[in-house]
Each structure stands twice: as C-alpha cells, then as structure tokens.
Image: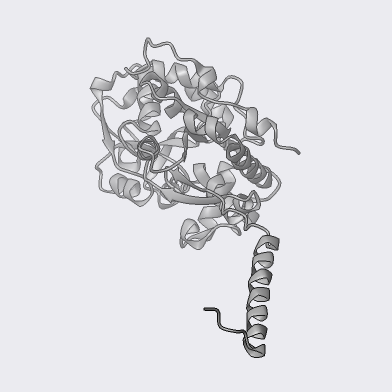
Length: 346
C-alpha cells in the first residue's frame, strides 16, 4: 500500500531529484582531465661527465617539461651499464656512446641513435706523472696497465684501437676497469694504472694537480681525426628500435628538447652554462669546472645530426679488434636516424 506524500516529503523528493540531475549534468560538462605524460627514464653513463652534459642541462633548462615530457635521469658509471639496463627494459633510453649501437647490432639487438650530442669522443688518454718518461706515445704501452671505465665500455674500445694502431696487440698490455672521476684519479695516484682514458672535468683536475699529462687528446675534431682517422660521433641518445617504432611522437619531443639544448650551448658562454648546472655536478672548484667546460665545448654538435663520415669511422675502429663486429656485415643505416632532429625548426 502506497503511503500518501505530505507537502514536506514531496518538496524533499523534488529537491533530491533536482540535485541528482544537477550533479549528473555537471559531470558531463566537466572536461576530461588530460592524461599524465608517460614517464621516460634515461640512463646516463656518468651524469656528471661533461661529455653527457646536454642531458642534465636539458633538464635544468626545463626543455623536457616544455615538451610535455616526464623524464627521469639516472646515472651509471659506464655506458655498458646503461645499455644493459635498457635491454632489460628498466629504462627506455640511454645517453651513451654511439658505438654501442653497432656492437649491439652485431649481437642481434636493434638499437638506434636519434640525437648525436658529441661529434668527437671527448676522451683523453692520460699518463701518470710517474710514467711520463716511459710512455711518450701509445707505442710505449707494452707491459703497462691501462685504465678504462669498464670492460666493454667505449673507453676500452678506443684504448684498444689506439694501441693496435700504434702496433701494440691487446696481449701485450692489461686493461683495468677503474671507473671515472675520483676513482680514476685515485687509481692514477696510487700507481694502479700507468695510463688511462677519461673525460672532463677529470682531465683538468689531473692536469691542475700535476698527477698526469695528456698523451692523446680527442676533445676536438682535429685531435680526433689525428688519433682515429676521422670524425667519431660519441655521446648520443639511443633507444631500442622497437620502442622508437611505437613512440615516434615521444622521440620527436625528446629530439626537440636536446636540439634546443645544443643550440643554447653554442650561443652561451661556459660561465653561463655552468650557472644552470646543479652544485653537485660542478663540485667544490667552480673555476676548474668552467675551465674544463670551456675546453669541451668544441666537442658538441650544433644540431644533433650524425656527422657524414662518423658511422664509417666508428665501424672501422670496432672492426679492428672487437670480435663481435670484426668480419660481420653491419647495416649502418639501422644504427641511427636524423629524421627527428631534421624536423626541429630553427
């Protein structure tokens, strides 16, 4: 049996129905909230190394955020560590040396560089002050222990090539992984290595302290061509080809952020660039950092493009000693693309 509605209960009923209708209409009228950007994790092979500075600078300048990207930068001591993290799916991209894309193709892995940051390695073969009299060229490294960041790293690739080019086979010297930065400096000072390959700002630190001298300088184009016979594209952003095929829009945004960063670097002084960097990257000696950065600026590309003679030079270096690459057919066109950087407007 229905109970009769009183005046008060009828009014309450009408109010309730109106409220529900209003809420439903309001929900329909509210625009959908934009989905948060997908997180993109980049592993950097030593985030405080100047060869990889564009990654940190892009973050500091807000260029990733301006492109609507949620980018997290992680750091590993060597490029080989970043490569392994990417292949395991822990990160989506690596800022490391381009030569890994060739090495990986030889091992059946498809990886592609989408932005070239350094047209030269930025690496320097240093000789401990105590060994300077006995090591005057790479031909003198027989019986010596040579420091590299890690076995299988780009420093080990380059060290082996320089020694081989000087007529010294790998069986006549020892490669010792000593990392970079302070660990490299310690290895020099303790006499654990007679010479070793490292980058800025470690180079300037060793020169300032007098603990080491320069043997081979690949911080500029002329020095690199003299050492390796051509331009050697080095630091770059590379990703797995399967990821690139599925995320062309994200790749385009990353390319824009990095190219804008490279343009900034070529239109600002070392002092102005350093002013953008976090204190933990600069360290306690700001003047030393600025000096090292000034010496490094010639290594960076202006537009992120692959140098025309670069891939062939890198392949020549790796084919000389790397058993995975030597004698193998490598399709260099699958190791890089200028597609995304070419689309960045001036």
